[in-house]
Image 1: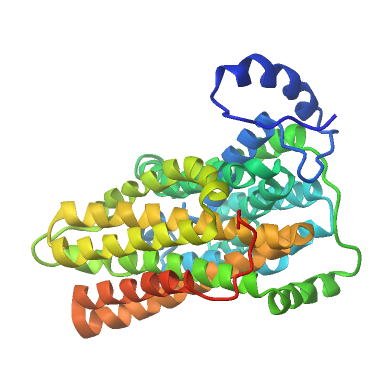
Image 2: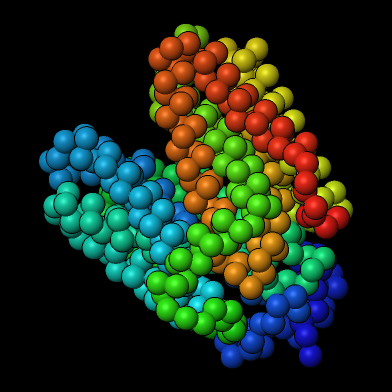
Length: 425
């Protein structure tokens, strides 16, 4: 019997029927998900929570760099490399680990890299050498791609009318993890030391391991062949699917626009009229919670409005954000409005285009997600670089121009011809 739609996961009907009928099956860990047949609501909630806890591994180190530098007696340059190698590891995981989920059992992959993440976190906590911390941070980054395995699960196995919405639930958990990691890490580091934070991270990974082992159903693979042929097929999919290239390009543009404002935010706030420090920048980052909350609801509108309209709405919201940043960027109100609008616009565009990317090749959803997320990563990196150059040349105005270019480019793709897409995409 196929799974019922998860429906509104907070509804009374869900609690009176879905929880009673689905939890035993999900908790057994022996059920099998089938494409388009639906995902048990408890499993969806578990994936959202675990996505947030695992992606947080990428961001615990950022508020702790000065403490690590002092304790390990290393240079600031080497300490800053911890963040760089962690993000580099995440990029490697996107390219080398995520595609494997189309070929090998996803339960095995998730449980394996979750175990390694716990080991890497413990190694960082126990380390007395910056080089050990750097090596373990690289491994931790590689093992933190679990959310990018869960999002395709939501897209592939949910009922067709709920695919985008359920992807939004998982993405909401991911965004909450990103936001919470920096705040929690800062407090833990201040009161208990940086090593305690990574010990806690290792314990959290073990708890996630137990939860995932009990609740994540089995899923059939869709690719038969060697690992080498699997990786080659990623590039073949990219080359032979113009719609996917369009979706990935839009994702790069919207993420680039969002990253532009953060690339030079610390420099902007350090000057007139703010004279603010890193603590203020961190507090402004909490404005991104709007995006995390919105992600859980925006996805349901993708089938109704279609990807092109969702992209247009998102791009217009981001352009409005840059208008606020350019005209009211000397006030906290203007900056906060810009951050909120950028986050909302990004969720409109990312959810719709990522959904379209996964649905373009449903039998290769993990490889499709690799293409989309790698493009996102590259777009953000390019925007960060260009924003830094623009800041040196024209200050805050230059940064705003850079962001406008990325958002306007995404909006222009809405008018691309030859988009022979179904109504829902």
